[in-house]
Length: 250
Image (cartoon, rainbow, N blue to C red):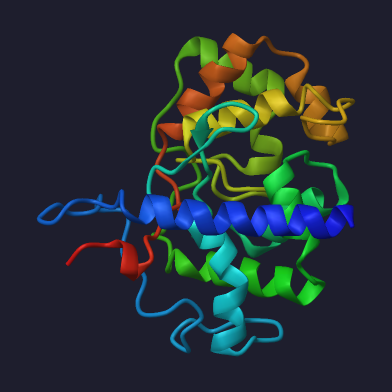
């Protein structure tokens, strides 16, 4: 019964936010930011090939519908555990998206809405959704092995202490394992909230359980975590928010 209630709650939130924020798309005559392109047709159209057990267009559209109410609206903000923009996931690696959904499903990441949505997904659902968002970003431009801008001395020392490049790559877009996220260009407020969450690994209501990230995040003050998040967000990266076509005024 608890699982059913969580799922119904998540569906209600996803549907409500989609309806409300669809009205907050750019007004007529305005253009979306250059790095945000409207999606072509309905989600799951055959123009988006699905690797690893492709779903039919109809079933894939139903699967991603819950996600689009937040992740396909530019600038959409969540309020748990504090107000922050939801992450850009178009162009993120499929393996990381799947790992994140499974972490919400098994409770390693505490978030009531995401837990309810993830609980309703099968292993194949997670694979299909992850592949769809990974491909939604299009082919990323070639990037060098170094970040697009160098950090200041203080932030450079913090990044070195955290050993971020050892997992996320020297340019923070080429992780050494596909289950690790691309973080270059991600929203600063989301990165900051995420880093703080790893410091709350023994809380039943909030936080994230991850031994490696928990050990890293606990070395730093919140001010230091924010400084690193702000720098990472300033970098060029592959991540985007791609508005669904019905939410873009013609």
